[in-house]
Length: 388
Image 1 (cartoon, rainbow, N blue to C red):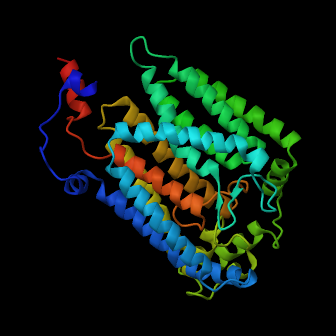
Image 2: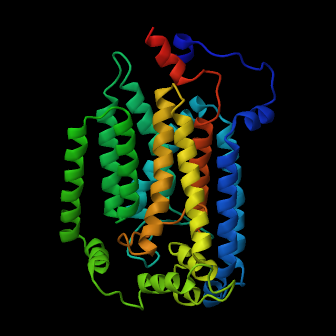
Image 3: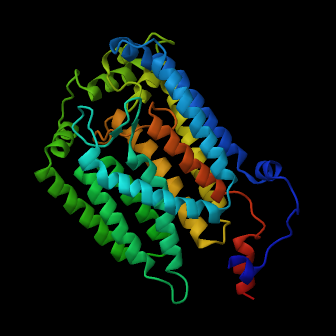
């Protein structure tokens, strides 16, 4: 429809798929993701052997598994990034139906692995966390509904996307998984804002989130325990936050040296939720700043390319995905330095976890597909034409 209304620029007929993909892809963002995954493997070599030894596995058991999951993730990312936005949207709808059904079945068939939250399906040889896969496909479906609402005589997409978001957040809160629920809520809120939501509505929604937080604190022991631990003035040095805080402090500017860190011996989640503590202790603030700059570059470059996009669905979906990736990284880093309550959230592409890394690969693949250069002209040209 966009091309019918505004026209397109000439295209190269008969150009092979891979050369066309390489010519139009954001190669800097692609390189950024590959570097982040490489850093994750490097940190996994340091963080996972102590855990493998405690679980009677070979020393590099978790690293080899992460490498296997990473190959799948990179493959999924590249294949998804080659697709057209229309194909991505269609597959996202199908993926959403599967992921949502899986999420709804967790209370019956899921397991908590002794962590107090039923978030996974155990397959014996591996486990699957449906919420990780639900996030990117929900963003695409919500963006589709929000963009459809902008059409003349279009459906009430804003209302439908809002109801869908509420249902998903409810299922996630029941696990409980308030971290993933907050990501879903935030990504939807960003897209709703970009789609032109009234400021009063956003303020009232923020008030509703605060009210729900108070209610969760009074009704969920899991939630209350994490909030109390965050608000206390003293940190128990034998807790995960205590170990992580001490490791970050000990690392200083350039770290204590490769393989010389101690936090991996004490932290049960040193290879997953608190992988940044291993990075800070062994490699210091220098590596942490590199990681932060890589995430910042990925998000800002994607948003910059999306400002030139005409299609409202692509703009909304790309913005939601970029915001979700950036905020997830920010939450993980914020928890490690005790700026945020503990949420049990992975660091994309760096933390160990099959569901996390594969879902992140799909999410970035979708983002790369949406930010590819297309023969549509610049949105500034459209605005200039309307002003004549």
